[in-house]
Length: 533
Image (cartoon, rainbow, N blue to C red; front, side, top):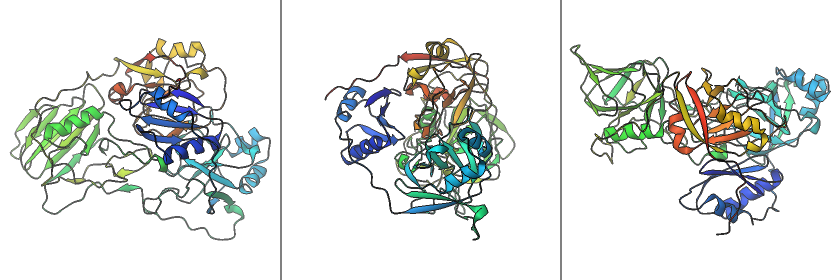
């Protein structure tokens, strides 16, 4: 085993192959190590999140190093057939890369039997192994910003089906009408580890294939009750999103934690109104949000310093401050202006929103399409009454940092690894030696960065898919990195040169477009040396 640093609370165990990875994963599930919070298996790595107050990375590695890796996972008797229209935009490229004709690519794909090795990247995305080795092709040089749901694709030794529209770098060879992820199904993912999978060519099928009409993975925003305290959204230039502290414990289904991008501001908003800190808030991007309240309420807004105006029923307008409780009366209209600094504001109501959790959380994951619906103009949101565990409002909340403005430079601490050794010394020096610009092609999934000098790799080798953490600085072949935020995919196939330290993740979530980022390494790359407890 090789033990690689990811961040201050995450490490990566590199193993010889997929069998060893699954054996270690099964061993740690059967006989856990105290302090491990979560694990993400991949092609030949196991990513482990741990609690550093319980044990050090070195002692955790020492507890893992002696595990038996001889056990093998028994394949399932279940076989899933996936009908495919072989019309993918990369089909001709795959033929060229393999030296086969398009018809031969289709024949070999449909005659293969695959096995679901593990789930990752997105809910319902199964990594399929066991196909014809001739069809092993590299990922695209630059990933697409959006691949349609149902796309059947190849990358390295894997085949897979994209459950939702999402970014990705796999080679698309076709599409399927089948739904890979459906919360009305138990389990929601059509592919489960161990399942066998076969693909069929719809152009040669005489039977009629019915398109799935399964329910969306999103849920109604709130539970509405007649006569209840509620607010009506009047304006939302960018849809607001419900967020809480995250959706944990669902990585086995390919579901990441998501949650507020600025957790500190989210918790502060709840404290401002006297709520428990894990209550759902509205995450508002770039201001402009407006609503009318139908009764007495207490409001709190934190994060990016939006100007706040409150107009009462008589038309009188008053200003209010962020990080302070705001008392509202029936008919008051609250409007948030554009924040001169920062990116996201958090809106909390005393008592909390009557929001429906999905898989244990009210967070909306924009990549996975899991969680409550986005909040748009005309939406009515019910506020809970009689909520337990309320406490007095807090009058001492302040921002945790100065919010950056467009054009300003933000310094982010970075832990080097786990794949720093895939880059030349010049590439490593470039990461911290130049400024990177946040581009408009950024969102809750990640910040796409642009620099004058791309990060130089040692070669163009393919990296087997492996777990990624929030804060990962992933580098595609273009050399222009992507900084992963809360809605990032669980696994990825491009090397991660470093990870933003946990104490700077909230700051990263507040960086606006065209701001500059300077990465400051705080820990050099080196393998973790196991220490016996």
